[in-house]
Image (tube, rainbow, N blue to C red; front, side):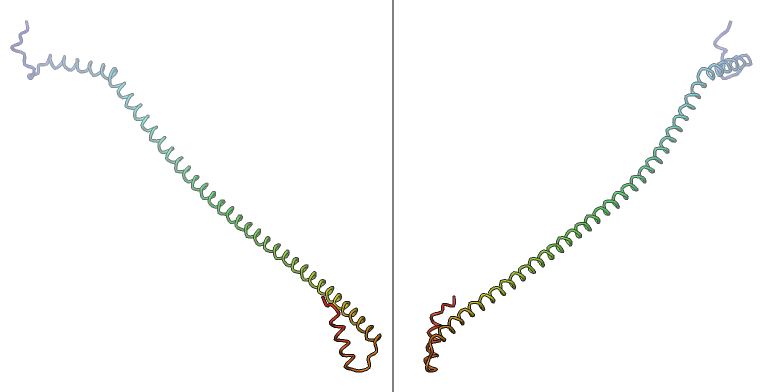
Length: 170
């Protein structure tokens, strides 16, 4: 029989060493197939997933940088187009104002020209009317002077003064 008193695990015996190696080898083979292989596959899968995530992050970062550059480019184009539109609007406004001023000047010039023409015509008509009235008055005076023959110059002067008082110049 085997007694426990003589057993010492720190003193190796050839039988114990042999069975220890056999058991450790079997344990290593079983654990290697059952444990290490799934762990190694899980670690490999995890490494692969991490690498895919890193690659995806790099790709996404590059796409974001490209999109940001494209957005900046589009924004710059939009600003440039906005400034062109504002400049065109200012030019159109200035052209419209200048055109309106020119038309107003032309219209005012026409109105002034027509008014001057009307004033000139009315002036001529008034002068002709005054001349006609003066001519008629002069004829009336001459007719009356001729009818009455005056003997002296003083009588003649008094008669002309009396006729001028009779004539209404309105």
